Amino acid sequence: MIEIFTYEFMQRALLAGIIASVLCGVIGVYVILNRIVFIGGGIAHTAFGGIGLGYLVGRDPLIFAVLFSVAAALGIGAISDKSRVSEDTAIGVFWAAGMSLGIVFVSVSHGYAPDLFDYLFGNILAVSWSDLLLISVLTLAMLLLVALLYQDLLILSFDPGYGEAVGLPVRELHLLLLCMVALSVVVLIKIVGIILVIALLTIPGAIVRQHSQSLKRIMALAVLLGASFVLAGLTISYQLNIPSGATIILAASGTFFLSTLLAR
Image 1 (tube, rainbow, N blue to C red):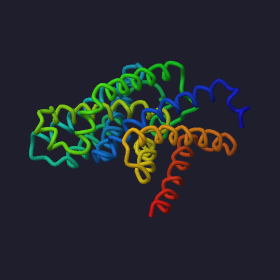
Image 2: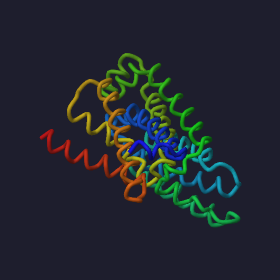
Image 3: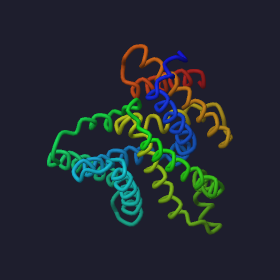
Image 4: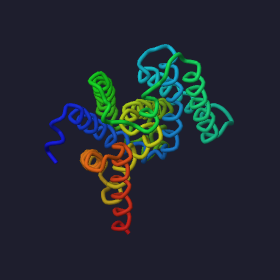
């Protein structure tokens, strides 16, 4: 097994997977506790509009995916908070609009988009050093935010009513959390793709939460679980010559079902 990681592309893939595991272990727990998994799905699909725009203007699609993801997070949060439109309706509109924009942008762009499927279904083996740099910067920024606002995010996740009573800016914290989810989505798109991004973001934390109550312990164990899924997925996909992103998710899903049976 060790010899497969002597290849540089496998080393980049493993490093990207470990960084993503750290992010999933921390941000994914907040996604589960705040019950915003569906919002994450809407943001992920809206990001496809940014990817299409990147192809259209000939720039890095991930940069535009960041802009579209953050805009979707702020838009969903603002519309559901300040209008009569329900949250799931706002998510559905952004979801559909982002995907449609992406399709239009790609169709009118010049040339062929050879790695478009990588953004939809992921291709961790194609992660470049520039992708790793962007992923690392985004992950570090979010970990710093979590460290600075840990207590506030804890209150937001478990008792937002108490947070309002003691003067916490609950609405602003909620929007900030959505933006953090948006950036997490961008990090994971290159690894498992838009279609599977929410699975990797939530499954490790969901497994650990079935067996632990301490937030810090859940985060730490979720990071370890995520890294284990990445390692197992890369190894199995290399041996069987099957897609890496899907294999990682299948390893995580299988563990989740087994964990659920044991938790009962």
